[in-house]
Length: 107
Image (cartoon, rainbow, N blue to C red; front, side, top):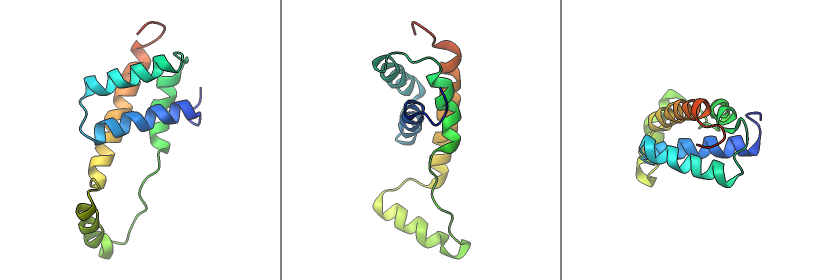
């Protein structure tokens, strides 16, 4: 399976969102394993998902002069700071890499 596979991208998005919205590693791992099982336990899915993290959409860059206004807008509408998104993506990649090593047939 490649990182471009919809299954890999879905698992990557699910993992990143799980951390972004405050999930703990055990809960995110449980949710990912459950989804993986529902998808038929596709071989290589967690490895491909870990690699897909790097290709998830990122917010567009804004000039330094506009960053304070952007942060204020994001705070006003409840969007997490970009730092939270990046930390979530790193945590997601780490968890997916661990699942790729440990989850084969029965997980």
